[in-house]
Structures are given as structure tokens and as C-alpha cells.
Image 1 (spheres, rainbow, N blue to C red):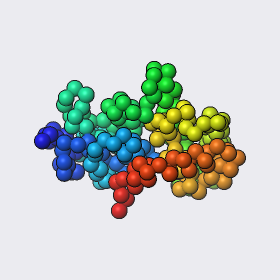
Image 2: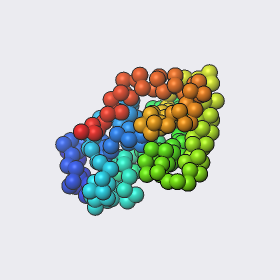
Image 3: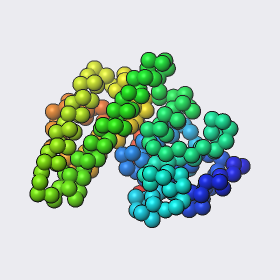
Image 4: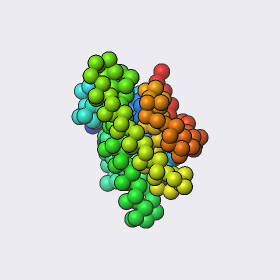
Amino acid sequence: MSDLSSFPITKKWPPQNPDILQLYSFPTPNGVKVSIALEEMGIPYEAHKVTLSDADVKSPEFLSLNPNNKIPAIIDPKGPDGTAVGIFESGAILIYLAEKSGMLIGQTGAERAHVLQWLMFQMGGLGPMLGQLGFFYKFAGSEWEDKRPQQRYIAEAKRLLGVLDRALEGKDWITGTYSIADIAIAPWLRGLDFYGAKGAVGWDDHKNLAAYLDRFTARPAVQIGLVTPPRE
């Protein structure tokens, strides 16, 4: 049996089966990327609910695995060098899992490059910008009298959605074949419902996105990953 005692996080969230991958997450757009990927790849894992409260994400135990105090994070007891490895940042975890499984990252060097460029599009653009949109459209920023920040992120969200819509023309998936790039992108598109912002960003003007999101959410692995770990 694997010994994960060198990872302080296991004191707060003890593993039931330390021989399988340990996921520390919460079902947010970033969090579900990893649970969906694990389900799609068929990698056995144990999910631990790490809420977004300071008591969890800013606890010494969680910070020992992710000093940036953000979910998700993982421990893989069967790391690439034969020892346990801890990883944070959702994009880095997706790449790690794709390389570990040999799945969802393309079959050739060119395909891999295309997958990674769209993954980085989500990590550096779509995710951060839609997150800011949520703050300024639904949460505290929506109460500010100065609406320029809100208008800025609405406009940027529209631009990014347009980029995706055009890239999806004639394709089911962003690179043509389902990949970790789709697993990264689609949960953030779902977030527009949570923000109540679809009308503001002209969702209905992007004819390819609704069908893309429907294809994504219809996948059995996605349906499980979206609710893992459970919120309650």
C-alpha cells in the first residue's frame, strides 16, 4: 500500500485508498476539469471535497500541496518516476493526466500542439476573462456605479466567444477530435448560466456554441465529473 504520509494534506483529508490518485477539488468550472478528465480516461481516483472557504483552501494542509490556495490539486501515488507526485493548476493537471494515460492530447506532435494551444487559450483567456465577467456582472462588482469594468469584460467575453464560435465551424470539437482542450473550455461556457450573463454576451449570436455545449454535457463521463466531488 502506498504511503502518502509525507503529504501533509492527507492529515486533513485522509485517503481511504492511498494506492489510487487523490483529487482535492470542488465542482467549479476549474475543479470539474480534472474530475471529468479522470472519468474520461478511466483512471481510478478518490475525490476529496475542498470547499472554497478559507478554512479549507487557506489551511496549512491544503497550502502544503498548492501554495496558491486554489482548487483543484492532485496526488498521484504512481508518479512517472515511480514515486508519489503532487500537482496543482488545472491545466498542468490535465496535461499530466493526458500524458499519463496517453489519451485526449492528440496522436501526433502536430495534434498535440493544437490541443495545447487551445488549452492555453482557456487558461490564459477564456477562464480569467469569464471569471472577471462573473465578478462584475453577478457579484460585488455589479454594484459599482462605474460600469466601465463591467462593460470591458462583457466586450471581452463576446470577443472570446466569437473566437470559439468561428473555430468550431464545421467541427464537433475545438481541434476536431475530443481532447483536454474541450474539457477545459466547455465548463467555463456552462458558467455563463450561473452568472446569468448569456444575454449580456450575446450567446444566441454564436450558433456553434450551444450545440458544442450540448455534445459535451451529453457525455456520460462529463455528467459524473460535473458533480464530483458532490457539493453537499
